[in-house]
Amino acid sequence: MDASSLIKTLRQIKSPFELEQIKRSGEILRHVFAKAKEVVKEGTTELDIDAELVAEGRKRGHQGFLRMRGLNLEMTTITVAAGLTGAMASCSDVSVGGVGLTPAVPLGSCLERIEKGMPVCIDYGGGYNGYVTDETHVFVIGRLKELFRKPYEVSRHIVEDALTYGREGVDAVELYDRAASMAKKARLEDNFLGFGEGRVSFVGHGLGLEINELPVITPKHHAVLQEGMVFAFEPKFVLPGKGAIGVEVDFIVRKDRLEPVTDVPLDIVYV
Image (cartoon, rainbow, N blue to C red; front, side):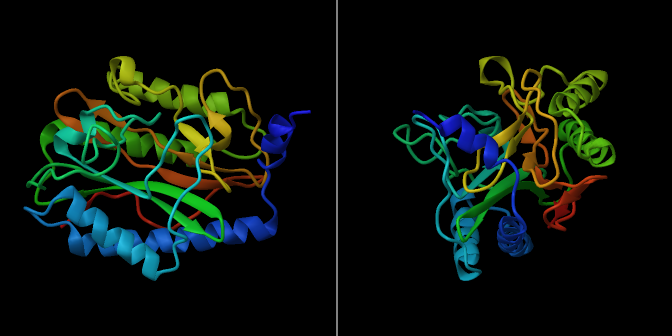
């Protein structure tokens, strides 16, 4: 008898011990994003930043890799996507996955150099004692290019709306629909979660022992949020031929609210 579905369902609700491990994982993530302020510099490459931040995470106790469920699904600890590379398709089921160093492994950071005004999206997965976290924050040298300003603000407002609306008892479909509605109202629906065939179907995913657990925040997967669930929420926008921008934050579901796993600000970090 295949009990995989039953086990995945049971694993949605985290015990107090599991939540503590996830928060410890989030602490690693917090230190890494603080370090990013020092290493994002004009002329450095995505890979330079990647290497510095992976090292910082390991020094803080990162377990070294992340688990992901699914045939041929692979995951790097970090993806730094700067400018145009954020708009290029990767081999993974994500809206912004990076192009990697080689077509043999088309995922993650590459040798693209950082320029003034471009959004540098750093997607980092923490890992502690088997439990993972996953957030994305945006760094900019100088002044952010105008075409990225509106998508960033909409992404931030979607996250803030989820914080206001989300709690135990809310259907995950409602969170997706509210996010998609805000993107459409801003006339960014064609860029929401990717574009064309590269668009993904979810705005959030569960976290735990794996980085893609239940619940999945999609327009079709009716899942009533329950206290103890943990999920990443990532309303990102991809502009074809230009780049990508957006934030990703992790939430613990409580009876009356969504509790952020970390205290990393949503603000763009200007360096």
